[in-house]
Image 1 (spheres, helix red, strand yellow):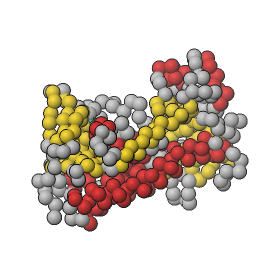
Image 2 (cartoon, rainbow, N blue to C red):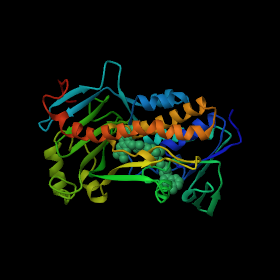
Image 3 (cartoon, rainbow, N blue to C red):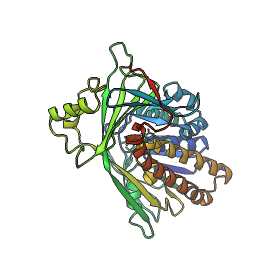
Image 4 (spheres, protein in one colour):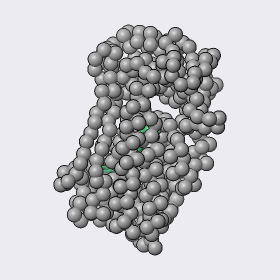
Length: 384
Ligand code: FAD
């Protein structure tokens, strides 16, 4: 039996927090969703985060259960294969699976906005934008937020920290006794670049239904298609050392780097030199923390407790799976949080540890092994 008046606060209305809000609302809980940034449906708040993401079966299963899979599938581009771009301009393909199997390129903003709107449709959900969590009292379960109108205190019955890889709730939790925490910052960083659409809205790069990779051993460029005809590209390379972001100084050197390393795409990229000069490369890190639950009423979820590197395309998918598994446990344990939260963290820990290992390993596969002649099944194709 679910006490319908039980109030649950979620800090962070990103991908995972907003999906969690939908799941809990569908179970009849009163949900307050607190987001530090303004409403993403009104302005662009996603600068610095990947514009598109690969959605795979784990993510689809979680979206299916809240009735959102069909709408998102209509805006997703299947990526049935990797297309490997050799330095000589050759293209080879490596299928992701059997015929009909694919991972999907989806828009971060598009999914987040849909999830927030779906949460909002439930009358027992209240959305609070520009509420930045700053303080938690783990003994009483109260929390404090900075808002444009000043500081606000809340006293929910449960509080979820869905506030991402740099989670404030987690950082506060780390100060408690018997907390285990590690943050592994990678040598690799990334910068996003754009291949704009043709004037008629078609894609400049092909094939469209593919994840494109330019594996160059010490670094790599990847590109995922967008519905508007553009491709979002990400250059992953070390911060320092030879062939690093630090070694690329000044527009002529950057331009020459792209023309030498990515000759078939250099001319399609929108002002790469300007991007390099204007933006600092973003760091990548893995977060490992345990326990995720305090006093059986404050719980971390998503990147807040298991941020990983993006090379396996599974961070969001794993966070979505968190929500689905939590919902299943609520069903099985009839809403008994005393049982649900310990079971949740225990059942998810081994799975997210496995994904973290696979994600790290996949950088080697993508940046190095995919470019080797012996790797997987390969088929030569014609450039678009
Ligand atoms: P976030 O999406 O970070 O959301 C956290 C939210 O909390 C934000 O809205 C933030 O504003 C808010 N917040 C933060 N602090 C506070 C506070 N103090 N108070 C209130 N609100 C706060 N995953 C995939 O599955 N597939 C991919 O292809 C993929 N590609 C990626 C590529 C890159 C370059 C990167 C960096 C990540 C990628 N990921 C991918 C991982 C994915 O982005 C994350 O796993 C996912 O965003 C986690 O969702 P989240 O809701 O836990 O955190």
